[in-house]
View 1 (spheres, helix red, strand yellow):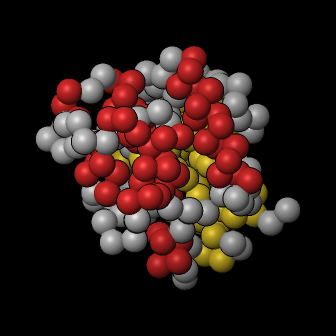
View 2 (tube, rainbow, N blue to C red):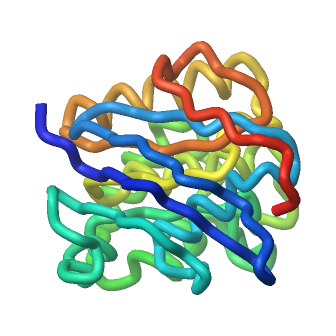
Amino acid sequence: MSELLKTKNLTCKRSEKIIINNLNFAIPQGKNVEVIGSNGSGKTTLLRALLGLVPETEGEILWHGKNIKQVENNFYKSCFYQGHKLGIKKSLTVLENLKHPNFPLISKKEKLYSAAKKVGISDLMHRVSSNLSVGQIKRIALARLLICDFDLYLIDEPFTALDNEGTDLIQSIIAELNNRGSSFLVTGHRESELISDKIYLGDTDE
């Protein structure tokens, strides 16, 4: 099975302090890896480093076997990033949040409604997001995963604030996207039962 993403001795620093030290891991195409660590352990730093947002980085990041700096345009087009701040605009409707800001030109309304139906919010499409519950806001974020196909999904703490039904839902979404050939790198404070391959980070300050 081909490796989608691979790191070799990845080291990340912030103000000369080592946050991640000599980290080696690989994500095969269609498979998932979960990064486990407490607050400040470097989970978000790792995701940001892969996206080129941490300047003090050493080691190598490979995308389909090539240094990411050589194929960065292809890499960025192939990745979906979602931080633990979901980026849902409270003043917009559910439909507007699904279109804006990532997919305004390429997503047909049928695709948006299909994604919303799968996560159980199709009847809320014209409701202003400020009137929704935390769980419903989370489902908007989950629907975004289904709108376009990406090779790699980088998701920061996707299981936070999810009830059992929500956890089952994200499990089904991950499985569906894996079947399409997509991979996930997700972070969390505690181990989930959904993803078998784990990376454990220490307790350094993030």
